[in-house]
Length: 289
Image (cartoon, rainbow, N blue to C red; front, side):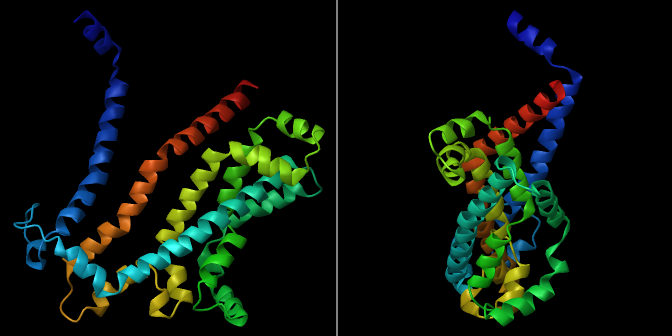
């Protein structure tokens, strides 16, 4: 009992307020997700009734929604495109960041500044010139237009994130590898890359999320129904149904759409925490220095 009283005395008003705010935010996030899931199990008429639980769970909504617009194909396209961009995008971002962080060459800081400047340029600013360029290359309405341009011009934020991680790795590793006869690429591949799992995993999840929920590029560059992604199929669901809009089917597809990103985050969340600890460590070192 004394230990409990001592622990309660250590709890400050600030801590109570902090946990209270976290709890409120958690409720605001989870309640809509719970409603979407429960709505996916209702009939169309029950959607408009003020009640949380369905009278009889309609698990067949998922099968009906899945087969309405060939969502199996859309799911494959989304996984395929996201997978290529995750693997190649993470490699390009990490390799570029390695050069900017670990190699000394003229103009390195200027190049890094140019990389940072691309973070302020939205896709909408150059999507029309991109369309004409890709049409000239013959890439429109192919997988290529949704993969090669992305990982060859990977967003600057991911390069920045990787560079900051590489800057925290001691230079002694490079020097020891050079003594053993390693060149820059072998240092990157055998020394730096294996200890960069938290950073690689973090930007891989960012890239996956960006491609998973991307709607603008598939709508702009893809015409064939066989190449559509899940986000495009979700946007077109209500337009292609012969009957009145079926919101219970929309909710079923929405559950399918959001469940995989949630699972990905839950599996790899510890790497986010490691990246946060590394970032806080770097800041504290700079402040103490």
